[in-house]
Every structure is written in C-alpha cells, then in structure tokens.
Length: 559
Image (cartoon, rainbow, N blue to C red; front, side, top):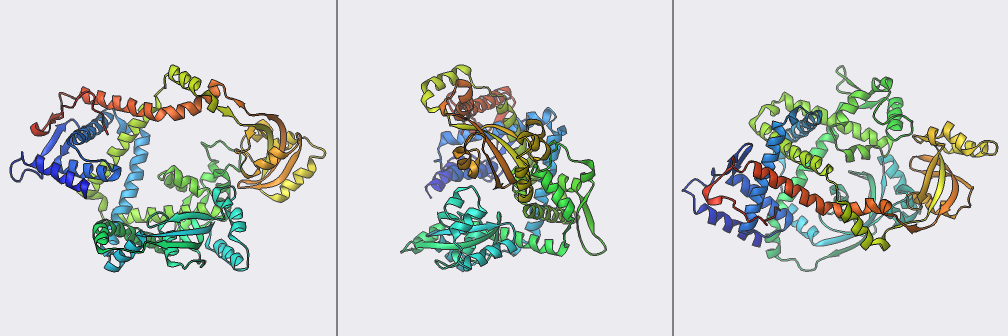
C-alpha cells in the first residue's frame, strides 16, 4: 500500500496544476513519434513500480518519462530508416499478428465466461500460505506416464526411475525432487494436482507444459493462523491473478477440444525424417532442407470432405513464427514434435476464425499490434546496438591480471566418437573395430554432423562436457574404447585419448569468461549513452508540458 500512496500523491500533486477535466487527456510530451499522455504515463509507471519494487519519487518520475520518450524516438528513427521493409520485421509482424489474433478470439469467445468465485479466492489464499514438497517423473506421452506409474506401484522407486527419465540432470540425482514450493511457483497443472494430493499419494498422469507428469507430495506445511485482514489485503491481487489463470485454463481446454475435433493425422515416415533432420541425426547443413522432404505431406486436419494438408514446408513456415525456446522443446522427442505441430494447427485455425470474425479490422486490434511492434523494434535496435559493443582491451587485461588465480582450465581428455541410432548397430561397429580403424568407421557410419570430415574426433573435452558418461571416460585407459553407451541422441562408442591436466588459462582462454562478467555493466552504460544521444538529437523537436518539463541534472540516470 505504501507504493500506491506515493503514486496517488504524485498524481494529485501534478493534477493540481491542471484545469478541471483536463487530467484525462493532457499530453505530457509531443514530438516525432512521441505522444505521451498522462494516462499512458500513469499506466506504464505504475506497472514499472510494481514490477521492480522501486519507491516512487519526483526524480524517478522524471527519469521514467524521459525513458518513455527516448524509447518512442528510437522506434521513430528506426521506422524513418526503413525497418518496416526488413524481412526480419515482416516475419516478426506476421508472428505477432498471429499471436494477437488468437488472443483476441479467446478474449471474445472464452474470457467473458470466466468467473472468480469467493471459494476460489479463499482456496488461493490458503495455498498462498502453504508450502509443499514434491517429486515427480516426466514422460513424453500419457501412455509412457501410465507405464511409469505402474512401475512405481509394482515397487520400483522414484530414485531409480528419475535416473532413467531425467538422464544427466539434478532431478535425476535427487529422485525427481523439486524441493519446497507454494502458490504460483510451478506449472499450473502441476500445482493444481500437487495441492489435491495427500502426503505420500501418487497422482495419475497430468499433462504439463513440459510433458506428462507423475507426482508425489512428500511433505506439507501450512501457516497456522490466517487472518481476515491479511485476506482483505491480498484479495485484489489474488482475484486478478486467478482470473488470468482461469482464462489460460479455458484457452488450453478449448485448444485441446479443437485439436480433437480437427482429427489431426500425421504421416509417420515424414515425421520421423523431419525429427532426424531437426536433431542432427541426418548430416545436412542446418540452413537447408532437402527439397523433396520440404514438399512431403506431414499432416492433415479438418472435417471429413474438407481436409487440409500441410507439407514440411508449410510446417516450417508456421514454426518460424514461434520462439526459439518453443522450437528447441519440440526437438526433445518425436512425441514432443508431434504435440508442437498439433499446437501450430490449432493456432492457425483459431487465427483464421478470428480473421473471419473481422477481429483484425478493429481499431483496438490495430493499436495493440502497433504497440507490440513498437516494443519489438525498440528491443531489436537495442540488440543491434549492443552487438557492436567492444569492451576496452586494457580493462579486460587489468581484470585478468587482478583475478588470474580464478581462471583455470579443468583437466581434459582427447575423445573420438561414433554415434548411431540403435544399440544393435553400435554393437556391430564395436565388433568391427577388431579389424577396422575407429576414425574410418566414424567417417562411414557416425550420424554426428561433421563426423565424415573429423573422423569422429571431438577434441580435448572436460568431464562436465561429457555429461553422464564423463566419469567413465576419465577413468578409462588411453586407447580404450567404451560402449555402446546410451545418450539422448542415440548410442555411442567412445575412444579415449591422452590427458591435458588442469592448468592456468592464458588471457585469450579466459577472455570469454571475463567478457561475460563485465559486459552487462558496459552494455547498460553503452545503451544509456545511446538513448541520451537520441534525446539530444530531438531536443528542439520534443515539446513538454510546462509543468512537467524534464530539465534533469546531467548526472541523472535512466531506470
């Protein structure tokens, strides 16, 4: 409440200088690409304070207003210089339009029906004051999750199965234990299931954003005394958040129902070829796909008699309108890729329905799209400017000299690899080593991109880089061949070479680490200087409201 008091005090002090009825439409700053109103400022500034936890002050208001104006000027300059003709901009515009169309359709069809009941608020308040500890197992499909649950009921342990499903991660070593968590700390479906379980109870499979999970709550602690005053203080935020969660749940339920009604069917052979290409199991330049594969039918969907077919090229065009993180998650397994493609189909159909309903022709949609594009342009220009940042050589050298003892190369071993998709093939090649050279076999049979050139040589690698097989490699004798060993990409044979012991890094070897340490602060200063230059270029073209002019001290820093 303290933040809100400061904010309200600020608005009241400023509004006192305005004529009656003027507060709602007053323009604080006007210029090329700049139209900052009091209402716009209030909305952005309030969100900033709540997001950062900073305390309101007159100086901070000035800083923030300057920041908003500088951002608008950066976007204006980029548009003046023709960024809208850039293919990167065009691609981003298409992606944002698709996303906002789906959101507009969901808002019109689904969100108005969402209600937050008093019982929902009470339960959320209890959860907010409760902590759970749980462990889980993850599977790509419901059938695989059911199999894991059956194995648990047959007596196998979470510890054993976690090492199998999570492979070489912290979760594998901790038996799937996620530690203590509370309200809104986890995936919504995961959380909903966990709070419904008794301590020790094992859940049925539940679909999360990361796959199908089997949960077990291992401990629970609730705050013993909860007061009406505390509930009243938290109620507005809880109501807003629960409404958002219910809207998302309604949207996901609609997507699942739509996916079922569309009867999406895949071509298994094409799906497998595409997966092998995406995961690097087929050696091919990353920038290209076989033209024949691009034209291959991947899936069909729609009502009987009006089915639509997507080729791999169609799928790729849709996938390019998603984030890198989404595409990387789709490469975890064939099942994950399949689910990703289903999601793209649902998104496409919802966007088409939104267009058919004319939602893309409303003033509100155009404004929302423009605002999202402005944000992207600003972030893009910032990214481009910071990509050119070069840290001073003398600063890097001085840091290395002062902290040299911390920069050391771990022990490494030379390793050669043969990667194949099946265990049977790995055993066949292992037997062939009696009469064939390891590198020759790697050139002929390894599925690792580049193996045909390198003969499977991975170079000198650390134990950490080798993941779960690292300990075996570092315990092996020079010249020894290990395997077949199972890794996420398939099965490998590894030939172990000589040692390079731990040793101090040279300056060039330490440079990437030093730059990573120092770059954030240099980037902040560099971008701040860039914004100040933009403001200076337009100083005589931006008009401020007399009672809100920003004649800030030179030492003032933007937030």
